[in-house]
Image: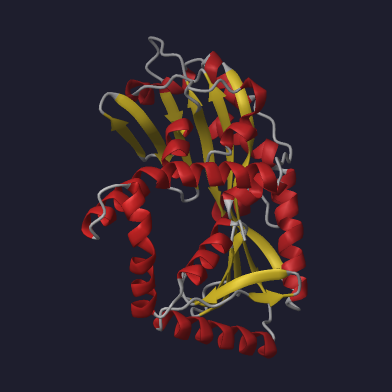
Length: 351
């Protein structure tokens, strides 16, 4: 069995902070402007806060008054409408975590809030630790060989093929074991082979073991700040894979907790946790490949349908008739095709 990668796949941050009134006024004006433009079919340009750019909207995460989206990096919620929720919430995207590493993400977050003039008392509300393997062959029947402190377990299968095993409820821990190659193909995250490195064998299944660790568990083990949690990642993995969930070799003993730990699981337990990063370029190029791969079949299908409906019989006639069709759509919508392309280029990170 070969370990391909291990690390942090999610790092959600929350904090208490006094939000300056001038910042709220700025964000409110930008949010309302964006909403007005969307209502008329347009799209607002992002707002710049120092060196950082965000689109500003409403909603998400317990109805935060301001939802800031930094494409390819993170979502930030500011000023919750509920008193029980934190003033600020940050959810970095997985591709950003793997591009710059968890500590690189923290440096970016800290720079953003400093630019906003905020002083934040940070806590980690959730961290996901993962390890990916070739040769971790799991089947639906394997679930009976696991010993877990969490009472809930779910199994998802595609025909006779196991896709995912869930253990626990997420309060305070949830374990997921799943076919990462299948998920990558479905999501278009084609940068994962760059994370897995030279030992990855294309076409061979990659299984992921992942622990979603929520605030209640972190609090129980005395961890709070982002730095404390990152420093303890390896210890958390050892504890969870050694005490909370283990794969055993069945024996005649009726007490399953006395069954020996599977040699396969010992490889899982030995995963190490540094702060690896593959860089923005590898992530961006892989994401673009994946998006293009996913979009192409549907795009060809839509174009062939459109060609038939506007009276084109082949590619040459389609190219001839398309400009008039696009121009008519621009008049109806009141938005130029060039502007729509510009927005998409920004969303895909190719602006």
